[in-house]
Image (cartoon, rainbow, N blue to C red; front, side):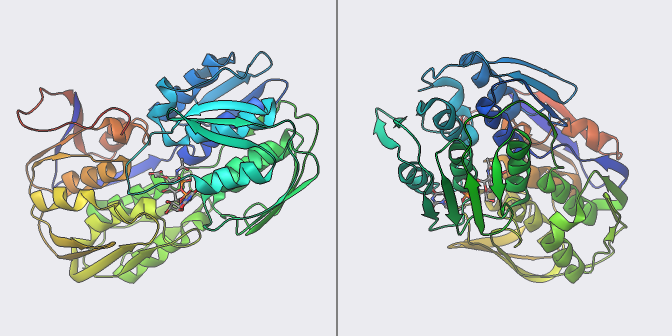
Length: 430
Ligand code: EPU
């Protein structure tokens, strides 16, 4: 069982580089299934979700290599092999295998996706979309069966602006006959990234990044080469860390426009944020004012950053409130922060935090990916040695984290620890 050991209390400085976006990567890789010739994706993060998707593509007959962030996928020999169990259970984004396989083979059998537990995470909007395109979708023995004689374009109104449903419907609709219109589509930058890849493969997509996406189906898609966008959530995590414990940190490979909500909140707290073209510099922040944050769909404040941000709230003067309107139960990190001396409580879908409170080192457990990132920041702030357990969650989304933080002067290392008696571990598929 690997853990991070962090000796905190030391100001960090220097430059840190952001990788390609996890939430794009996990959609771009399945999208390659739709091509008839090889697809090359550059700049992919070396995280466990990407390796798992590589294995999934290989299970269905893909020839895949992955080296130095570049994945080459030859999808020509792929088949509609059922994927009821195994790797698909390890990550939530395996749901993109549904749309991609349905688009290519008109048939798919995929086990229920795994991923972080953040409260209820239904996929009803994905299924509603597939059905509107003419597929029959059934749930048999815990696996989703999708079948269609042919896919026909349709008008689909999403009840919630879901990232996953928007991308999944796009993946199937690019191979449907006629036009599909997705209304109330999600607008996240990762959707534009996937639409760009598909367009370069020959798809006809208009409006990605707005709430109405129009897709004219085509008969065939071909291979292409694509460079992924930078990970705005990894960048945001480093920005929060810089505000909490930095002594001047430059974050490279960022699109500042993707982080406007976070930048605005940091400035409201009294943090200086210097935006470059593809970088952000955060000088040392001397004192922080309390702020309230409500997570919303893009371009609102991202739910994926509320957990790291709540650590910053423990260092701000006064009471701060964070409300998560996207995932009501994404607050498991608060108990762990309390073990580190944070003052706060969870009330329904919000957490109230009081500060400034010096954090103390403790043995804590990552309940999910971004909770883990939050605990790493807390560990960097805390005096003494913090141990963060269940870091496989963190490694699903952050590559080379210890190396990157060591580059800023952090005292963090990864070790293999013995299980603590009585401490329960999460299962691998979260
Ligand atoms: N929802 C439904 N029905 C659906 C789909 C979603 O009710 O069919 C609800 C969800 O329960 C949630 C809201 O709609 O309340 C938004 O969910 P969405 O579908 O947008 O989320 P997702 O596609 O499952 C992606 C990211 C998450 C990120 C959310 C929100 C991937 C693989 N995951 O999830 O990323 O939190 O969008 O931005 O892209 C993370 O990176 O840590 C992470 C969890």
